[in-house]
Length: 354
Ligand code: ATP
Image (cartoon, rainbow, N blue to C red; front, side):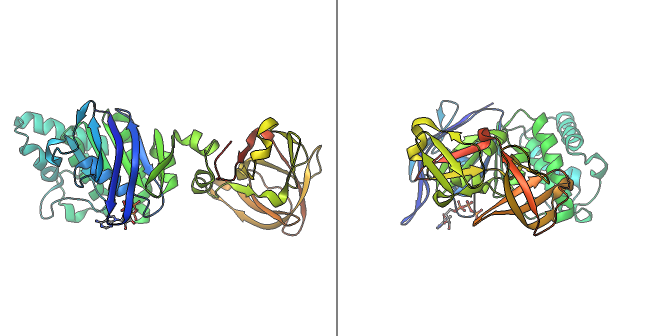
């Protein structure tokens, strides 16, 4: 399989630098998700990897081969777009066969690949149906099948779940997860949806304003964001940030209105401008415990998986805490919280983790 190496890759549209000097490697046989808000340059980056856009400057290598000027059809890749590319007025089976006919494969090889891919996607029972009979999610599975059946070295996905209706979305995401675990191709997947990225990625490349700000496995980027943007963008809710007004820096230690224990930050302490804490890192109790800090519950909501999200107030500081149990306190009442100092991230004046 191919790994993909981008060297100083830039794409400008007039004054706008949609992709700004990216040097980055995508390991072979991995699932790399390009994640970021609308307009950050994800699709432009993917289109250059696909050969659909020419870089303004920089180079793209598949393994050691420079493919920057190689046309799409000679890049040995498959693509799946937001709207499924399928042929209406014909069967699922024929849709899966079509891209293989131009590959000059034997009819037995074509039949094998069609059956294998249908099996992989769980659509074997739909092979003889007309595509018009299928929901949007199953149509997108056919588009995935068409890309996979050709057995390219790289498969690119551009927001394949975005246009799928809500009921089919979950099933398609589950199916893609299964497909990705069984494929050995190098997969690049674009999305603005962080839960999709957390579910599907081996590594998330987080983009902002045309650059990749962090690339790491989902758990690592979630737990150790290397800037405030990553802390905010990943997670639902995003990371809590505690600004200078609510922290005291003295000597080598930090104290805060959010916690009683001190964080030993050593020499780094003078650089600290903001602290970051994940909602689930705040341990909440209905009773006072050693080293706990009192907070008032200002909002309480039931989250996914039976978890509760509490909006807490410590004087003028407000944070969100996630608890897996019913704390037994209502809005307006007090709770006591403790934070393990290992779960606190420090950021400097440029919002970079230190
Ligand atoms: P979205 O999820 O909304 O598609 P994105 O992260 O994929 O966002 P891009 O589509 O890559 O972002 O766009 C990056 C920037 O480049 C945006 O400001 C967009 O308006 C601009 N842009 C993209 N394509 C063109 C084009 N062909 N001509 C001019 N500007 C473009």
